[in-house]
Length: 367
Image (tube, rainbow, N blue to C red; front, side, top):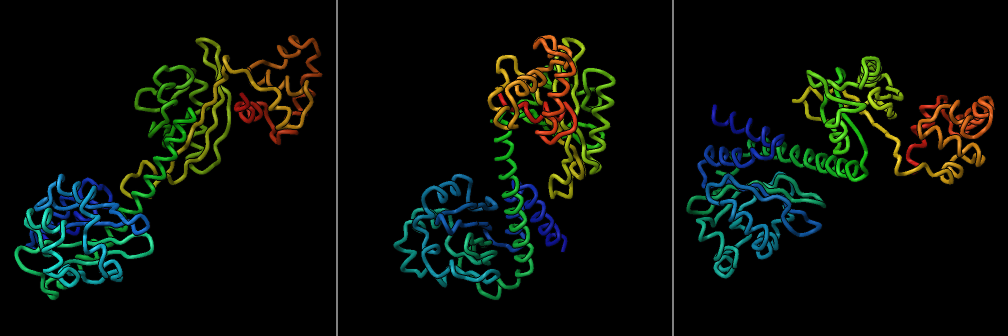
């Protein structure tokens, strides 16, 4: 029973960590005293394997790659009635591939038989309109007896659950990778932290910002910090609020070293993964940083169209995005501060926000 329980444990560990599948399959082969075990997932829409792994007892990584790149095209099992087998059913290859077919088939003659493989027996783990998954054992010398395969049915059920979980996680990780790539391609500065402001992950642009150590940096203990003590306190308060589901917030931070500034928006990250083994992700906060660009001036025309404001109001909005105060804007434009403040109130109303930092964050992308 120790071998059986350990094999079950390995199956579920492999579901979380795909690199462990060969070890899990090898353990299954040892437990059932067969030559090797193969896990295959066929993409039915594309008509080709999505996954083909083994315990490496018979099929080396090179042999697996050869099947994935060529031999699957001449696999008689994929061209027979086997793909129609219902989920959970037994699958014995000799019931679908006769000796005459095997004697003439390229897969059997040039690949399987030279490797010492000929007869397989296992289960159809999943069969729907999108995929067909199979878990098959390699016999040592003769076709599997149906009863011998059936006795391991409870183990096959664990394998089915593990494979299903592995595919679900792979899909989510793939979607997450695509989102991460989009964030990096857009050059967005995004940092993920836990409720104590400890760094979890960040985009490529954020990593560059943290490496420079300007408006944001990583302090001792791996906690995110601002350039000033006051800014750090304010940032961590927003993070704690967001990570606890309180909503987060928006603030402007200035770097005393060069008087540069940036807009920081903190939003709840929520439950960012379904992996129950990593408690760091139970709750987190996402921090987006927007910095003014001197080389790319704010597009006044875009602001005017987006907000439906006057030319003068759009110019005031552009000045705010550049970091200018109402007093400086009044001086630069030769109007009173009262006039500028009236225009700012109009802009806030048109944008549907209450504060200047919110307006600046909204318009920062118009460059």
